[in-house]
Image (tube, rainbow, N blue to C red; front, side, top):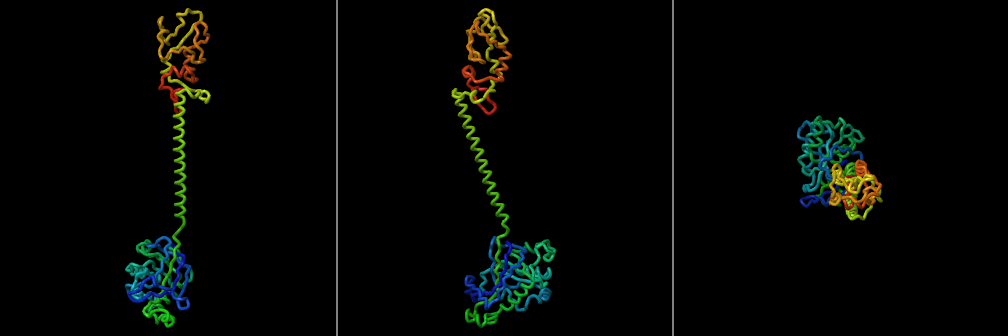
Amino acid sequence: MSAQQVQFRTAVFPGGDAGDADNVTLVDDAYAFFWPEPDVRTLSTNGISTGENIVGPLYVPELATDQCRNSTASFVPANVTRFNDLPPSKNYHQIAMAPWTTAQCIYEFLNSADTDPLLRAIIFFPTDGSQSIPPPPNDALWDLNDGGHWKTDHNFAIYAVPSSTGRLVMDALAAYSGNLTSVPHGHDLSGRYHPSDYVREIAQIPTNGGSSLPSLWVFLLIVLGLMVLAICGSSVGVHWHQKRMRNQLRDRVIRGEVDLEALGIRRLTVPQEVLDRMPVYVYHANEARHEEGPKPDGDTAGANAADHTSAFSQPTCAICLDDFIDKETTHIRVPQLLQAIQELRHQVCRVRLIALPQELRLVGNGHDSGL
């Protein structure tokens, strides 16, 4: 969560064991140090929640070696506010501040800050005297030759402010480190506050909650999910409706309530095995009556063959639907031609509804039996 700015202000903390963070009050600007710094660089956001407003008293962490104490003495006044100078009742978050010097001293500042369980952030400032915003996190200035672990190995955020701002705040931390009467305007403040109260510098770091890009992606994913759900729901609904209509149409066709020819269905076929079982009547002109009876395809029928009709007997022409009239019918039916017509251009007719088996009277999706 990137910092929008840093405000350095002066606040009064209740003294003694009765101190409570809820009773912290800001000192009037006429008697306080106030410095709003918009040029702040975010180096790490560890331990910070989205949109969190970090507020706490400022102090400078202790150094472990004399070498670092001596090298930072010109940037850290001797009487600067330390952790032990904060109010004794430390039930509030704290913010540390330190100069950005050598790698060893920076590690000592960070390790000292790690011992404070209530620390929320540490603010560094370069020592080059510049008044401009510090360089971005990937700049060589912030390279400690550890692969960036100094940014991730600590449970607090790390920010940076211009060098000139750091110098001003360090002077304020030195000025507001003693008792109530020793701070700037102490006599005026002693008439307003209890002598045991602490006047210390605080920092306020509002964060902007990070980039809005993840939220945009979440919104787009939600919209995409709703679209996919709507499409899938519509598809399921359409398929269910089509299946229901097909079932209804099949039932109506079986009951003879639908004329498929009127619907434009003209290429209905009958399975070959059914055609093979249907008798083929071949009539020859100028022959005796007993020679004109039905003859099974490929065999010669007996004298009483016509009397023994089966479920596949066909007393009517399946092509023109005319009844067969002995010696007057001029419709010539060639078996090969009849078979081709039955297979390729067979139409719905009353004869087929009566002659064909029940299981063949079905209507499907491209696999119809021709009914």
